[in-house]
Amino acid sequence: MNFEVQFKTKWSDFDPNRHMRHTAYNDYAAEVRVRYFQEHGLSINEFAKLNIGPILFKEETSFLKEIHIGENITVKMELEGVSKGIERWRFSHQIFNKDGVLSAEIKVYGAWIDLVKRKLTVPPTNFVKIFEDLPKTSNFKEIPLNSKK
Image (cartoon, rainbow, N blue to C red; front, side, top):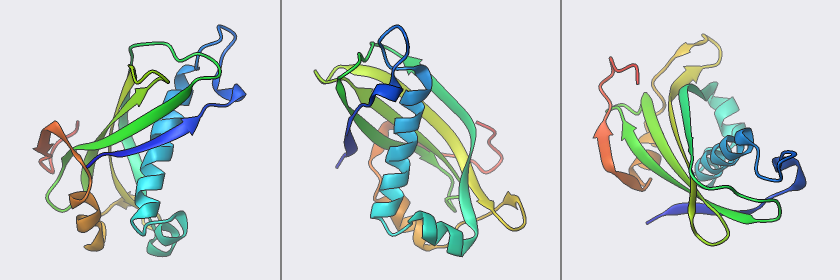
């Protein structure tokens, strides 16, 4: 099972060279993560009620093929790693151009923060099922809690 979203790119995604600006790729990856959680009962409002939110430690983007102005894209998301209690996680995103050619890969490593205490936290147990349902990469690994990457 894949989790992917198709987008119509917009004028503001592009730079003067007429290709997608580098930060737009990351914006689309973030949108896919938000949509996945929302479709699984974790809307922005639910995160607010829980006083919890995702934070990123590292975001790494590899650009492989240009996306030009006017192209539509598909963004696929998979889980590359997660700790036993879902405290930390690593997502992999692939962005494909209109012809289905892989154009960028984005990897993010993050955790959950308690928005009141401003400290890392363990998410509620219902997060476990949400992460179990995520498609996994072929190199999926458990993240040890003392891991910094």
